[in-house]
Amino acid sequence: MSTNFPACGGRMEYVCLGCGARYPHDSLLYACPKCDNVFLLENPDFSSLKKYDGLYWRKLFDERTASRSTALRGIFRYYELLVPFLAEDDIVYLGEGITPIVEAPPALRSIVGVPFSYKNDGQNPSASFKDRGMACAFSYLKWLCRRHKWDEVLTICASTGDTSASAALYAAYVGPPLKSVVLLPKGKVTQQQLSQPLGSGAAVLELPGVFDDCMKVVERMAERHNVALLNSKNSWRILGQESWAYETAQWFDWDVSGLCVFVPVGNAGNITAIMCGFLKLRELGVITALPRVFGVQSEHADPVYRYYAAPPQQRRWQPVRVRASVAQAAMIGNPVSFPRVSALAERFIAEGGENSFQMIQVTEQQIMDATLLANRHGHIACTQGGECLAGLVNAKILGLIGEQERVLLTATAHSLKFAGFQEMYFTDSFPPEYGVTPDKSLDNRPLLLLSENSREGRSDADYAELAADALAERLQLEKK
Ligand code: F0G
Image 1 (cartoon, rainbow, N blue to C red):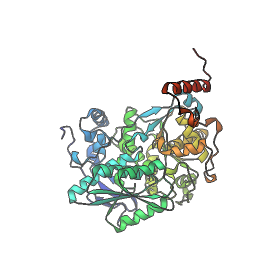
Image 2 (image 1 turned 90 degrees about the vertical axis):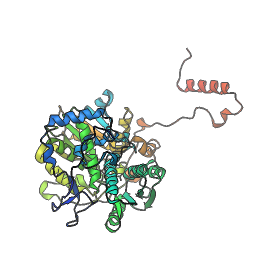
Image 3 (image 1 turned 180 degrees about the vertical axis):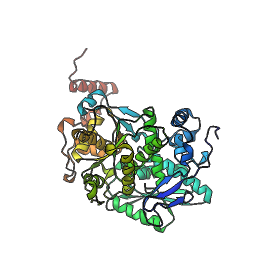
Image 4 (image 1 turned 60 degrees about the vertical axis):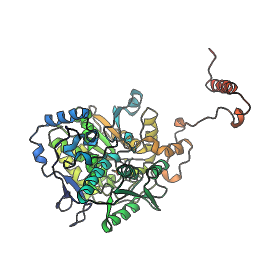
């Protein structure tokens, strides 16, 4: 126990985005019992936080960077803005959050034509931003188990690969009474993503179809059975992911005015969380102006883009049937959080003006080219991170980025999870449905220096000599 852990005892409420009904925080709810709409969580005593000014909160959060309480080292650095009734022992910390923001080097900046940075959320424990939400959801689950003395809880999620990796990791860490089950669209998560829940010991179930099919199944499971759903329909996940906004504001010394933030949109949980987080900071006076938020979608999975591309009077929500996408983790045609995005976008625009929320569409070719371009300049962007860079390039072409503005992209997962798409690019083996043709100038593959049997019958010294000569020849190096 540490002495600097804040006094707990606050409350949260589920607020329905359809009918406005409110429910207390002591049971796990996903959809409004009255109208079936999704929730956001709100602190009913939020106004009491306003008795302190923005400076107070900035100072408190800055001081916590030196906290010796493990529970406050990650996303719960912002405890008062997250779950203010958790005890220190409830908090699950696996090293999530506080991810770095890395500037594009000058060469890349000049190719793109705009200075920008990446926030590397692939540097989370399961190598994606999902860990922010899971840390929050599992901490809340621990609290629930303690309160209700539950002796077994089955956690369940559908996933394009990262939610499942994260859920399985946190469940493995917490252990009983929690057990993890994940449902994946067969063949539509990468090998690396699949290995994660397997390694964590989760029950891994595959279903022919796409993510949207799996999501419907787990929603039904959550309606009919006693399971804890861990998709972003679970608002505790969204709450934890708000930490992305808090950290970003803190990184820029609490000034995000003139900042354009690019976020890939799949199930639309993350963009919701990011907007919620910035709005909360603005309301508390921690920041004085909102950044602009750009959601990015591939033309192979773009329902949110299509909605906002229509003139306001003609907007009609319409899920789409997805096509193969290299931004596979965001390949979702019927995002569960669409009602949240539309509510938040309205609040964002009311607060920050017409241009403070926009959707950008990109092609598969642009996503792949941008991913490789970023990584050839020292970034570690996944394909969804590449999607953000492609979004920036298109936003610039459309004249949406001002001269004086700063740009922050999010690399939502680590590049290694998506190595298979890089491999397809280098070997020119994309199935035609992706519509990706490799740029040969980016090609890179290993070269075998000596033939397979060249090691046989040679001493270590001879072999090293032979290989060194072959290498020097390959590199066309003169002897000194
Ligand atoms: N980037 C990555 C790496 C993701 O894994 C996801 C979503 C997104 C972007 C889109 O974020 O859904 O909040 O809009 N992955 C989910 C999953 C759906 O199951 O792992 P979103």
